Structures are given as structure tokens and as C-alpha cells.
Amino acid sequence: FPVTIDAVVLWINNEEEGGKVLERMYQGALGWTVDQLKVDWNRTDELFLKLTKNNIVYKDASVITRHQIDQMCKTLNPSLILIDQLDKVGGFHDDRRDTQLGKLYVWARELAKEYCPVIGVAQASASGEGKMWLQMDDIADSKTSKAAEADLIIGIGKKNQEGYENIRGLHLIKNKLTGDHAKIECRIKPDIGRYESF
Image (cartoon, rainbow, N blue to C red; front, side, top):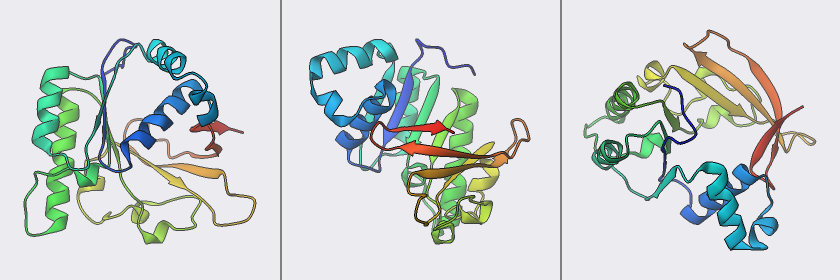
């Protein structure tokens, strides 16, 4: 499913404060600091909408269910879906958390089959703290079927070491697309919400 420039990107945020995520979205797209964004909000908004072709539909909701997302997909027919955090999507009922997560990740996979790629953001577990190269066991609830349902898993790791504050390790933990399990060291630029290669 190639994403075309005019296609709808559905971005669902149920994790961070909505305004903060939107600000980071603008920073990442434009490569600007917060101070640069605030110089002229009208111009900032105009440039952002021009750059993105106004194709990002952003839904900010602290609680969201699979049924709400299903309805949005039927209406929008998106070409890319981003859900941050996937593990917090509601509408999956079971006594056991592992079974709930299994159903949730099967649903996300079915959504991808019907519409487009789904990028689901999830947390690392405590075992990932201070690790540059995360492994499968470092994914929160990795012992559930959630890991089995994903085609590609990218771990973002960080050393707790002086001099490495803005260095990140991107590890293709699972890659059913090409089989490449690359480890890429890069720098995060928090002032403009981007990663850059060395």
C-alpha cells in the first residue's frame, strides 16, 4: 500500500497531551524550533498545511475504542494509520491482559489488511532501560501474541551514559518485510522533533 502525498494519514493520539503532540508534529514537518513556530502562527499553519497537503487527520482522545477507529477508517479510507499508544485502544474484553492484547493486535493486523499500513506505538518494558539496542524481550508484554502479529518492530534504545543524551539506537528487532535486522545509530534533535543520521 504506497502512501501518496494526497492520501489521508489518520493520526490517533491517546497518550501525550494533545497540544504537545501537535506542536511536535509541526516541528518535525517544518524542522523548526518552538520559538520559530510561534513567530507567526498564521504563516506556520499555512506552511504546514501546504507541506502536508492538509492530509493529516489528527484525533486526540485520552480514551478511544476500536469501534471509533473502525468508523473513522470507513469514513476516511486512510492510506496510513498511526496509533500512539496501540496497547491503550479499548473495546477488547477478557479477564486476562495477555488475551486482550492478542485480540487487539489481531484487530490492528486486520485493519492493515483492509485499509493500509498501521503503525502502532508501544512501550519498552523495564528491561529496556539504559539499553542502546532493544531486543524482543524488552517490549512491554512481549510474551503475548502482540509481537507475533507485527511484520516490523523497531526498537528505539538509549544508553544512560554521559555524552549519549541525544544518541539513539534504532534496531529492526523483527522484519518480515526484508529480513534485515539492522542497527542504526542516530541523533535525536529534540529542539525540532527530528532524528538525523551521522
